[in-house]
Image (cartoon, rainbow, N blue to C red; front, side):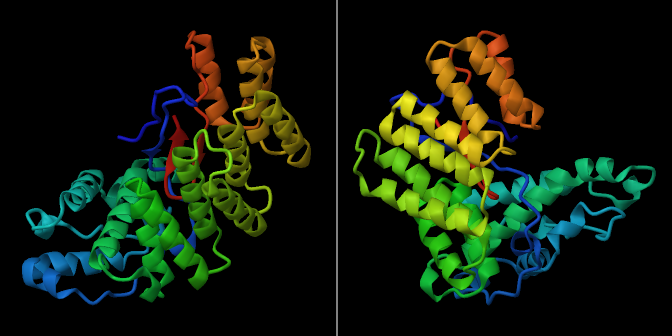
Length: 329
């Protein structure tokens, strides 16, 4: 269901594409129970009471507990009351994926399982509960001026959905509001960084002085201040430099400096490997990817595998946040 895009990155015709929902980080803001939202009149008039009650129950769940071991959640609320409701198609999709992922949730199955086995067996239910709950919050506040929303949990939910659906402008707007409400929230800064970086790549291609590049740079700086050494911020910084200037020697020099400044990060190793590959130094590229792989970088391992199988464009370096992963294809 969740996959990386297979198209080569960095082609001239490329556009940033949301390609995968990541297993969301255990941030209290994304996991915690949600406060009740007053149902808009249009919802109260068209959605059954049973479905509205289910939505309220699902939003009250502490999502982190779904994967905890020993289990702390006895059951996941059943969404059968919402199976045939007049909601938008995108909402139906989230409902269906939640139903499929959680239909076999059974605490008794944890007997005899290790903590890891239980997490693996409940991971998709955990993820789909989180994003469906975010979709509910987003739809119930659809049409509400974001500037009037002060609940950081609701704003977080709206960021999740906007990024999932690739609505970069809305993602930037909502994440900026979230930073106003929760200025120390790194996930909010990260989402804002992703949105502006991908907008710059999409709209600023072949325009070195496009204003979105500076917006992306500012957003990267904010994320870096909240989480120095963040792999996401390092990736965004190097990715924007390359996509803005298309200068391999420049990128290699920047990646080398990043590697010196961040010796425990595998990100600069991958970007240096990309520059070596582009320069025809296959052996050097592989050596750098092996360094990254030795640091536990699964993306580097995937690139190495594509090189070994002879793919002409094995590098698919992407930019991800706590909410969604993107590739500059």
